[in-house]
Every structure is written in C-alpha cells, then in structure tokens.
Image 1 (cartoon, helix red, strand yellow):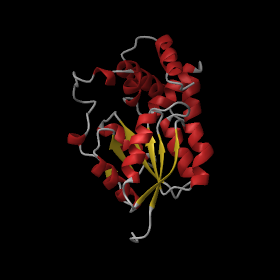
Image 2: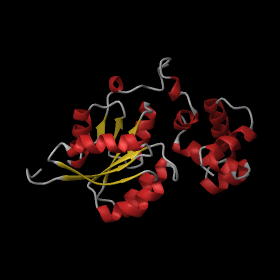
Image 3: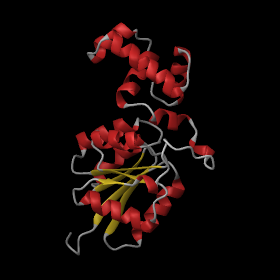
Image 4: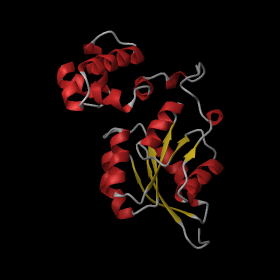
Length: 219
C-alpha cells in the first residue's frame, strides 16, 4: 500500500458503542479513514455506495436483512468492497459458510485494536482473514460464563444456508413437495433438512419453526 493511501472503512453495527469504539480505534491510525457507519442493513444499502469504502466491517446480527443477504447485496452492488464480518458468535462452520458466500474474512468482537487493524489490512490486500479458534468463543465448546451467547441468534447460526432457506419456505406454509420443487431438490432431501433443523434448534413442531423464523425476521 502506498504510504500516503488511506484504507476507507465503512462500519455496519447496530450497537452505537461498537460504532464509536471501532471508529476511535481506526481514527488514531493515519492509514485508515472511517467514511461511514450504519445501524442496519437497510441504512447500509442507502449510504454505503456514496461513501465508496474499500472495506466493510459487517456485524452479523443487525435489524433488517439477513446477513447472507447483506453480503450478497454488497457483492452485487459494490463488488470492489471487501466484506469483513464481525460478530460475538463463532464456529468453524459459520466462518466457512461466510467465506463461501463472498466474505473476505471473519473478526471476533473480542479482537484487540491491533487485530482489528491487521484484519482490515489483510482483506484490503486481497487475502482472506480468519481468526484462530483460540481467539474466539467456539459454539462447539460450552461457555458457561457467557450465558448471553445462548440465544436464538446463536441457534440460527447453527443452521446452514440451505437449512435457513428451507426454514423460510416452511414458515411460508409450503409443503415438502413444493419446497423441493422450488429448490430443485427431492422431497426426501427436504424432509432430511427439516429433521436436522428441528434437531439443531431443539424444536418439536412446525409451529415452533414458524415462531422462530418470525422472531429472527426471516419472514
């Protein structure tokens, strides 16, 4: 990077203290410039294009669009922007899924100022940045001292992209046959996904699935 070039960063997070804190951290460095912030996916879509950042620091749990939809929107409308996802929630499966969908990396909210800067520099240079398991709480390991992580959003992150798609269609009242036709998969595959969804969410009925989907703003 040219020593006179600044990396333009846009931060999307629904917690004002996070926006302020990360902005202050980056503002102390001459190689970064925070060009905009947003507290929802919709606000991000309205303001980010004009800001023209190089890197988007994207919180996974925000009001509005699903985080996969937010990543897809950026890849379609601002393909030059490197999407660095940012969350308190972590699992290897989640990170693989995010990178597969087009994210340039994953950063835990427990990251130090030095790691925040390193991750932005890494994705800006065209590389993938992924935190190590030791730097973030893994969903595969119980975390008894952090009960706030045991919420519905954490359950949702246990679902694959395909399982989330099927959950949405179930919540819209579609039969397994119709879901299969919509997604070009067999009815048997849909039923297998449905059983896995119920198991992962620890539910017993479609009614619980619909309520969960509504609470998570998936429908």
